[in-house]
Image (cartoon, rainbow, N blue to C red; front, side, top):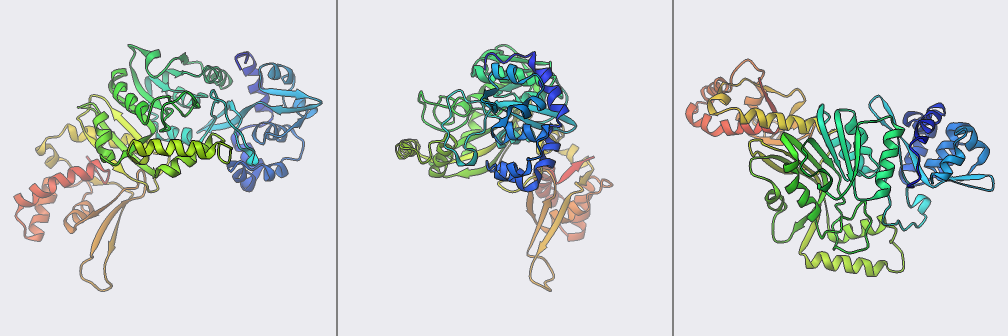
Amino acid sequence: MDGLDLDLAPRLRDALLAADFTFDHVVERLGPRAHGALARNETAPGLLSTGSGDALDALIRLFLLQADVARSAVDAALPGLAEPLAHAGLLDLAAGRVRALLDCRPYAEEERDLWVVSDLTPGMDGAANVMTGDYVLGISPASTSLAHLTMRRPVARALDLGTGCGVQALHLAAHSDVVVATDVNPRALAMTRFNCALNEVAQVDVRDGSLFEPVAGERFDLIATNPPFVISPANTERLVYRDSGLPGDTVVERIVREAPEHLVDGGWLQVLANWVISKDTPWQERLAEWLRPGDDALVVQREVLDPAAYVELWLKDSGHHGGPDYLARHDAWLRWLDDQRVEGIGFGWINVRTAGSGARELLEWPYEVEQPIAPAIAKWGDAVARMAGLDEQGLLNAHPVVRPDVRQESHGQPGAEDPETIVLRQQRGLCRARQVDTVEAALVGASDGDLSVARLLDALASLLERDPAELTAHYLPVVAELVGEGFLELG
């Protein structure tokens, strides 16, 4: 892999484009059935869909389906490149047939066609694969989730911490003047450099080193990371892309604690991670301890796995499921989690903004959300900043507007005069739901920007024959919550 010549990248890019080896064309050629099967690591439908013999079919079979392809077909699809790519470790040439040693996968970001080189997807068609420690993961659900989470506002400097094959660096380069991408795996760094060259991305500075060591003394506007977060006992046997070598969720804690020192005021840290749910402490309390006073934080727990399911998941990921030492590995890992009093493992997002107002929301939200979720995270930050700039009188003078996607649901017995419950539900972003009383529902329903919060509360007090001061004292904090949760926006 160290011999992967960056000068090959422009030639490979031209050949991939000439063959229409782009995300949209591949999806169209495979069709829904074969494309869905490929997502499950099944190749049979794809092989049936790619028998024309043209350049696109040859590249799909070679890289995506991991099939042997005739040398003549590869020479037609990658003219003059078979020998150089074999020398670089991308292809294996033998007896008139060619097979891929690395994955080269089409990818897309809005209007850009991209390609990502990584190690081959393991477990294709159920084959047993045990990955080496320096395995470089390609495009995955985790990398896609982080891409959807990361805000895309223009910034001067961004850091991709633990870059892997460089997917996040490619995304960050589209809206950052400078991107620094770091990793401890030399093979990952080599692939990132090649992928940047392959996609004509010049502003990525690729550096070797652990955590924040390669950027000591530097600050960034945005740090995005999908760290090696798998929660396991520290040991010498690890897959670098997923295992940090630190016990439990220590690596995530260190990132959250140390990142603010590498962010400008108002800079964002965005982390996709696992964390321990302890039998002794609620997860919100544990993670809140990692946060620096004065910084804003939105932490969303999206999923929880019990320890046994978690161990099974990652032993399958490493190719040990069904192996001769599976039970011993499973038992040792599960015993360690029990010894650490781990009740479950949470998965989700950690978003931290430095030099804020100290606003914190640690939310358990396993329900469907709109993707990409990044705009909703940005709007949460905007709402928090807006509220931080208002005192009580400022909030009373503000003119609230209900967000256009908010819908009201009323539930009760047929024919009843009043509903038993009223729920406000967002159709976009985090798609939050909030149960409200009749006063809150009426306030939100009347929030069209014409009246201030003070006048709305006075009108409701008069309508309900309530004391205006008492009603205002009770519901003004509720207005602040409705703004923070995105049901209302302030004009």
